[in-house]
Image (cartoon, rainbow, N blue to C red; front, top):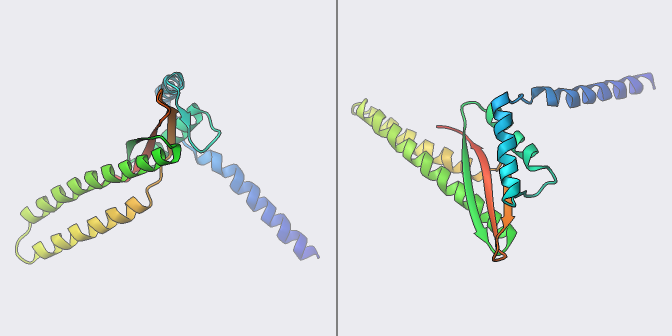
Length: 173
C-alpha cells in the first residue's frame, strides 16, 4: 500500500512539474513584436477576421504564431489563402495553396543547390548530387504531408462567401 501511494505521489509530482514547465519554455516576445501583434490583431478585427477552429482571440493566436516562429529560429513564415462559399472548403483551399507555395519554394531551392553542387563536382560526384536532388524532393513531399498551420483566420465576404488565410512556420532549406 505504501509503495502504491509513493508511486501515485511521484506521478502527480511529475505531472505537475511537466505542466508548470510548459509555459516556461514559451519564448517571450520583445516589445516591438508585441506592438506589431497588437496593431495587426486590431486591424484584422476591424476587417472582420476571426480565428478558425478555436475560441482564442486574434491577439492570442498571433502571439502563438510568433512564439512558434521564435522557437524555430531557422524557419520562415509562409502565408496562404483560399475562398469559397463553404468555410471548410475555403480552409482546404488555403491548405492546398500553402502546399503548392512550399513545394515551389523548396523546388527552386533544391534546383539551385543541385546546380551549384554539380558545378563544383566532377564525374562520379555528379551521381551523388542527383541522389541528393531525389532525396530532397522526397523530403519535401514528406514535409508537405505534415504541413499544419499555426493559425487560420477567416472572414465572411459581402457576397456570403468565405475567405481564409493561414499562417505557417516552415522549415527553411
